[in-house]
Image 1: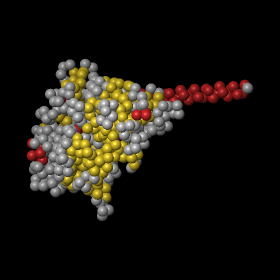
Image 2: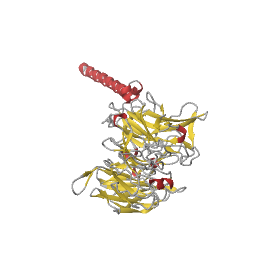
Image 3: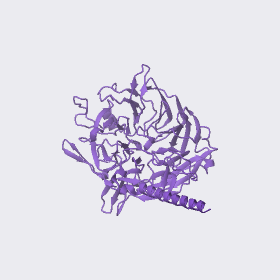
Image 4: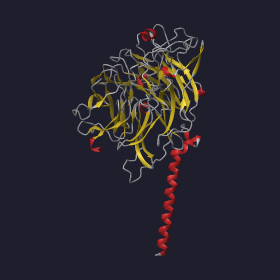
Amino acid sequence: MLKRRSTVILISSIAALFIIYLGFQVRTNIRGSARDPKANDASVFSWPWPDQASADSQITPSNVRVLTYHNDQARTGRNLAEKILTPDNVNSKSFGKLGFLSVDGLVDAEPLYVSNLIVAGNPHNVVFVVSEHDSAYAFDADTMAELWHVTVLGANEVPSDDRKCGQVSPEIGITSTPVIAFNNRGHGLMYLVAMSKDDSGNYFQRLHALDIATGGEVSGSPTTITATFPNLSGETTFDPKMYKERASLLLLNNRIFTSWASHCDNAEYTGWIIAYNASTLKQDEALNVTPNGSDGAIWMSGAGPAADPQGNIYLLDGNGTFDNTLNSDGFPINGDFGNGFLKLSSSGNKLAVADYFNMHNTGAESDADEDLGSGGALVLPDVKDTAGNTWQLAVGAGKDGHIYVVNRNQMGKFNTKNDDGVYQELIKALAGGVWSMPAYFKNTVYFGAVGDSLKAFPILNAKLVAQPASKTAAKFAYPGTTPSISANGDSGGIVWAVESRGSDAGILHAYDASNLANELYNSNQAGERDNFSDNKYITPMIANGKVFIGTPTGVMVFGLLQQQ
């Protein structure tokens, strides 16, 4: 009996020491970034606790993560790990509105998601939301309880006013979708850009890095965004009050890429891309793509610059100066690339335009405000033609209703007479202009233009088929729609799209990805049960059986009704 009691005491002591050790490790992982500069190194993505959902947890073990706009650096919009929502159970009887995540301002950014994250010692599936009131939130995605809420405003500061532009109104705070990174120790950081002003009328743009477990600023955060770039007159300077960070952030090779939009077309502004080291938040490089001209801002209706596996960046630039006179390499002689489909190289910490395509009538399109800059760029997976040749392509569209497919290795540059240099141009393939971005799934590209059906364009012989294979019965008013895809690998594909209805309630649509004529669900089918307030340029985010949609006052959550 004495030996058994001694054994029990020994086991209890070991268990207690083990629990203390685990608590120290979790606390170290959450707080260590402020002490250890290496903890801020976001260059290596890894999952910190693969088995952290314990047997008595109320959440299902999962590694689902949505860490960036439209799911990945290519901006495909695919979540291929959706095992709960299927074409069989997404219907008005079993699927609908579950709840609402209330915040303190307009939600323009796509929510992000991390499953099985340890917060305050317990695992949670967490959805991250940012607002135009300069706040960041973490919610439990299952119970919808608020886990943390922080403001990123400085002392004696408020969010910016709307700068006499109704695009983001009545205040400008955190507009673009942040990006989340995990370092090689499994520590998660969320990077975001916030605009503010102080009581003296000074405006600020700052890059912040927040600990995703606590919301706390990490060491070295925030950094104030400033920049200069050489031009023929000496240099041009970034003026924070003239810009907003509308396009989503890109994390690539341990660097955070910001890209800057104007307030409406209010002068004076140019086209800035500014890169920061994700570990130190120090500026690595700045590029201006209209340094000797005007305009050429980057907004893409909230889409983010895309990246290919080789580390190149792709974006659609807005209306602005383009130099018709080219140098011997075929580049604009003064370095002005307004209204262009641009490829940027970031090798060797040198950010530069590596290649481009611009339409033969680019000047007329810019003058008429029919530029490319309202759409987002999508990097396609490598495709093969019937001869077995491999092609590396990207696709985009803007206000002219054409779809442009570029060869990423030879984009086409500029010709004053025609667009023959581009890999493929589908003239008027869309019934209206694009204020959104496409999605990709199973060799098909999905576009949702203004006043048009959502259309599915298959890829055949390494080119988009000119006529869509299927399209929706619904037509989408301004600003069209940015689709997102959920699927379990290659099966069970669902295309999700939000229809803007102005002052009326928005509509969430779900379509069979293999045939868009087959609508599985829309939020009007159950009367007023699933109504939600609409917000423009919204991209739905799907994770672990739920669909998250930004609204003027928070995030609406949809899912299987039995989950309630």
